[in-house]
Length: 371
Image (cartoon, rainbow, N blue to C red; front, side):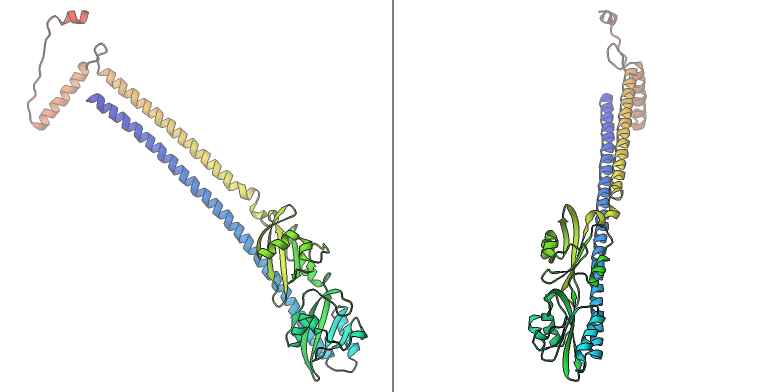
């Protein structure tokens, strides 16, 4: 019974040691998993915030261009009402007004849509109804301020963008439209400030994909020619990822309010997410690996400590057993007998029963020992 009890206690001790070790492994794995998830979520939140700020900057740039166009339209309207409402000296006033806006192309229509004046001057088309050729002039005839996409100028057929303003005169409604070259306008300087990141590409295009302004100054007439990959991506979604050249980039396309234009911005990912790249990106993972190594080292030390403790406990048990066992016969010795008697006496007193001791003497037992 004593041997079985010792074996049970030894087995239970080993089980408890293994249980503590496995619990340590599970707890360490859970902590590392939670920390890993936190790192991933934190990095994704940072990336999402940068993307949100990028989109907000695109929205602000589109609004800025819209505000500029609106102010330009107001200036055109004020000048037209002041200088282009009469008939006397209309051609000279028209020419001076066009020069004030830094443009070399413009048209002035009467209430029936007929051409009253044109710049550059072309007498052969005066009196013609040209509005049907231009959607923005038709809209202005109906009383709306309108902005065109890239169209051909009335006099020379050059690619221009126009801002058409309807205004009232004593002789009825007139339409004044100033045209600006599709390339090299002040809009180009605006879009250059949309992004300060290296390698950015910013374009202002009309609804047909014709380029109004291009930060790269590639000279391409359309978005598809300037960047086929970007044109294809924008056709599918207003915001996302695209590979331009060999660089992964993030792009967005935003409508310019009050115009048929879109502002398109593309920035290389290594520039856009530079603040969360490099050391900022991998340092949390290095820290996590170091914590894992420290935790594993602690578990190894714990396992070794538990193993040493188990070996010491087993050795103690063996020594205690050897101290109570006769080495020749493997039977309990005098010390074991004394301990059994003490336990038996205590049991008898506790339960109020008698205790008997039986002494047996075997005759000639020496001969058995000798042989």
